[in-house]
Image (cartoon, rainbow, N blue to C red; front, side, top):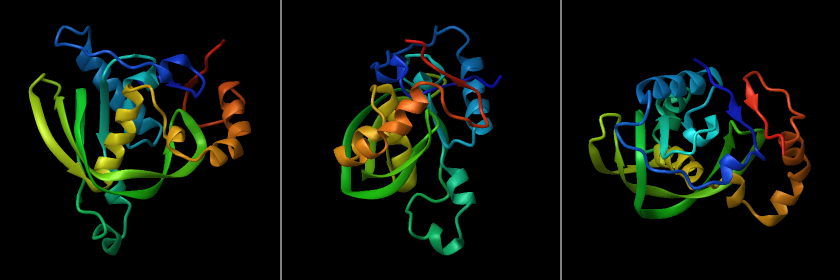
Length: 193
């Protein structure tokens, strides 16, 4: 089932999400719904806070990015062909490499894109959907998508990583989104505060 995406301005996007365990109700269905919601809105990652669940769960499919790159562009990134994976209770162990810029967007902040600096690689401890613990290092575009989704479970947004000047320049767009004055081709949930 495709779920509505929580829009910028909703408090769930600013909360630090909670760990879950294998007893979390209907987790398999929730994960399936998250994949369907992500693909239905043309996303490459989706975190549970974006569907109004303040839990440490996100899904990533960076293979879609590589599917849309030219062959010579793929060589720029060490992580081709990407991953399709579920991350539960993720914790960053270390950030590695230099920071590099890339133009990011977010389903919760539609029609706003900005260049964001992130580290080349991230070492992550997380559980898969069977609650098996993994420690793995991700790099390239995949690391970027993971770091973007990880921010969501920490109550952060990509716009927190841009300059104050750039934030001032997009303030009216952000205000419109939080007021529901935006048209997108996927369902959104707006905060009525």
